[in-house]
Length: 474
Image (cartoon, rainbow, N blue to C red; front, side):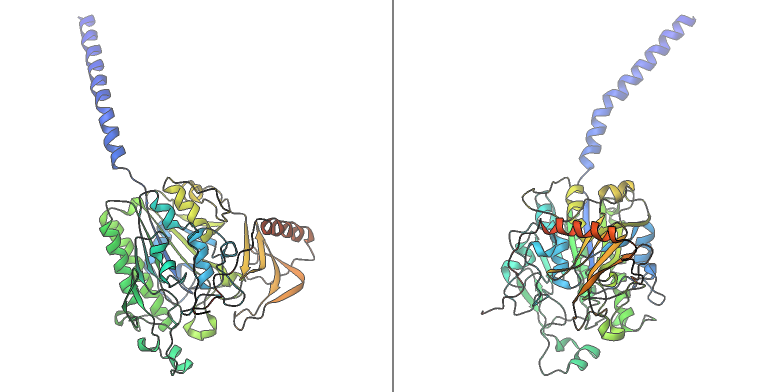
């Protein structure tokens, strides 16, 4: 009897194992077919300072949606833009290369203007161009500032769709409007900036009072239209660059005044995007990054933002001019936490390309690092150095925790007063993020080491003509 029971038991086990094994291939196939490349959203503010979010220390501006993004994602406190003004900083983000490599910087005209005859070269690889090779739908929404002529627009650089203002929102100012009136009492008809859809101007002047809302809705609409395929959305707000504009719903809501109203509306827009991703079920397959192009434009008094505890502002390569909030959000993939390692907008291209399953073409020098292991597994960031360019000149350089200054500048950025130092200055920017205590006398060997690093970097840079200097008709 016991032998009979044993035989039945063995038959039962074998039958069960057979059934389970026979089902496994179909299950694996179903799971595999449901997987796809992650989506990417980069939200890029304009002239927002490190200290302008409540989660980064502002006592008056309320940013609950970005604060939630911080609490659910990673907050990087040593995250940098690669330039201290608009055009080169955007070129660096999209190409993963210092602008000195592609002519997107100049000592004569530091950014592109409506009369500029240049832009980002067609030979450059952008994030969008490389992701399209992986089957991504791509959209640029908002400020472009890498060339407004057709051959330089987003649709010529790998983006399927463009909706936005092609340069800064303070350009095309009406000549007979006094500067003080134009910037401190801004009206939409003071700035004849065009709003474009792809290569067509659809509104001029753009109604900047509604621009943050419209950019947000365009981003959500594009994501919804491409929810069944991997997508990349580059949402570059024109604000809080002056002149400041805000919608009726956000007028007077902030304790920080008009500037705070603008930041809080951008925060609302971030919340709208994150809510869409949650409600559509796309959140666990979407990496969202929030940062800014450079520090605040402090010469506009309370219409400019805050660098927090950092020295300097927009137009300088002190920490306040280039260190920015860096927030990464990807529920279920990125473990929430505070990251004090170095990162930069330069790193976004190699990181996103790797996460998409692609590889970088090896026909050029890149200055970015792949941060994916740091984001997903908490590994130490591979970035250990940064070159602080001021146009074509190297203002300073950081290696590890130490930063050398080769020049000095007006800390407000304007007027520009770049002066080469007779003797380099050295700061330990983890201990002294405000760059107050010069340690050059104590650590000359560190200065020598950083100078060697800078010379090695210079050896990789081939001189190219500037794409910012030529004007239309010249």
